[in-house]
Length: 338
Image (cartoon, rainbow, N blue to C red; front, side, top):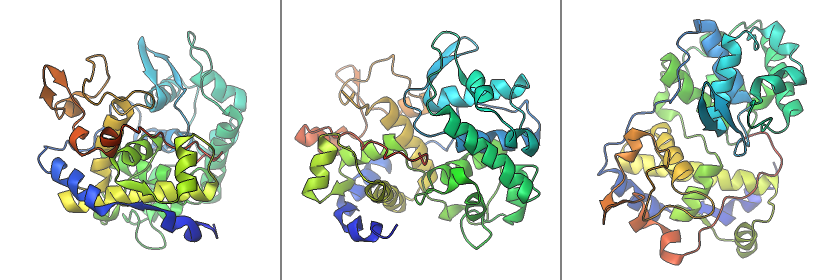
């Protein structure tokens, strides 16, 4: 994108704020990255291909919700659970030929909830991404994501044949900020125990929750007044502006990780869980986190207690809390990147 460089100076990460957040995190026992679901009952090929396919269509899931095996879930949690159920019930077959032939209505029936209906948007676009996954695998004689790992020689992000560079062959993984690629790298480490010789170089995947959280913390700063106003007024941004905002967020997480000696992926899990559940869009739970808020136990234990209430751990270092201006993340400009 030729104009990305031209506007990149308008959005930056604030190193002073990053150091302050890192100092706070340095006082915590940051949990290791961990997923809330398991697909251990699937064979190794299906486990790997399931993760590839689920991440490939994991974008703009904020309205996605439903009930899986008696439990109400939303967003990524619902998508992961309902696709796992479809694999177990043989609705979703994960071999390349089946994926390449997947119909729109087949995907729609897999993810629709009997109670809440069809809440996953753009079914046709997502089914096309899965068909592309199957087609690319066939073209490269891959039967499993494990073959991609094999061809990467255990390199995640370094070298011409790294895992991340091979993922770019798939349409779903062509985001310049690499949200899906980096998230998949986290998943295969956490769920499949795949090891990478350059694991320290893996950055953080950035989604809309993290953009919102870091804009509010002040670790990401928009210096251009017109763009700042458009964000405050919830007006659309261009694809180039979207890339710059998300990349600044990624750089902020990398900066914080250096200052607190933690990997960006580990911090991603912490930020995502806290921003998603506590630093919500409308009225964030800065000073009083309800017991009903679904923060995983390992992160809930990090929340400070005062006056009988759980607090956001970043309250004292949060720019939005200081100013009272709780900016929301920008709207997705129409991509399937995150």
